[in-house]
Length: 145
Image 1 (cartoon, rainbow, N blue to C red):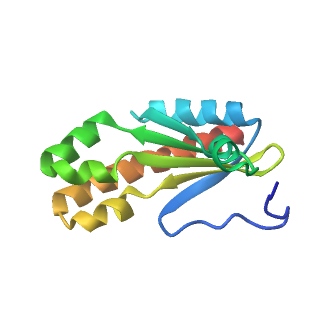
Image 2 (image 1 turned 120 degrees about the vertical axis):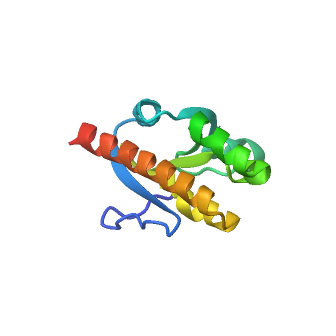
């Protein structure tokens, strides 16, 4: 199984932001889900990418989960503004193993995702969603300190 080296700092993607957490995978998924709920997000989907790669391709990889998070109030406003914006939902959160007991949690940046709409009203909603996801990250940082 490939993990980044212990000295390698996880890169921050241009289209997201994140935090490193310690624990077991199920525990990390649970605390991330709880923090999302505190900011009004529900988890609509939980994709176990590692299990899927094993099952479909016979390939082993480190733990990798994708949570599809949605804030219903913001999603409703966005869909009322642009019905096809559902193509850009939900807000994905990736939880991936860095090594035994260490996980990188990455949040998609809604401002980057919704910029393709080129609508000022969508930019306002994206900013609100980003601020909420940043608060989720901050909740996780405070709870792991």
